[in-house]
Amino acid sequence: MGDDRCLHDLLPGECGFCRPAPSGLSERVTITPGGTVFHRTRRCEALVEGQRKAGRMGLEVHDPEVVPLARVLHDRPPCIHCFPDYAPRGTKLCWARHEGTWYKGPLKRWRGRNDAGLWEADVAYVVELALLDVVVDERRLRLRGAGQESLR
Image 1 (cartoon, rainbow, N blue to C red):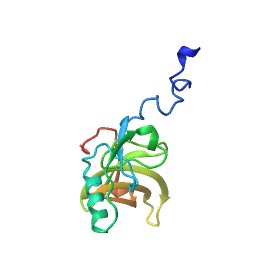
Image 2: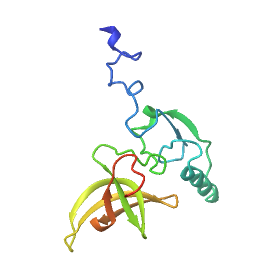
Image 3: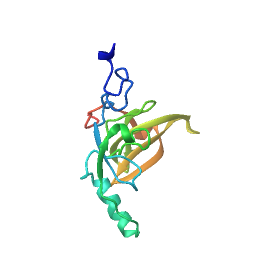
């Protein structure tokens, strides 16, 4: 029975350090102490821009640090810019249209129909490195599969 346990003496799939990363995420991720999300690499455009913004605001700019995913997965969400194909439990991958362009993001929840009878949903997506958390109706929303690079 001891052979079936990981080096932390847990069963396969129970250990947050030994089980594989969820689909769409990396085993090791990049964080900063002042950040609110985790990134795929130190070169993430959103991370770099966030550090520039912190510097302009007079805040302390911390060096990015690479850590195991298990250390941060339950403390902060993934950067949508870095991990557009990750759908946390209870969400779906989608396209959201913003000013004529379609962006990748997670559909967080359906709200129901609005006064015009159109379905609405809470979605998140990144436009020019800015995270938008918005409500969109069905005219600006399409479900998508992981790895889908366009609506076609």
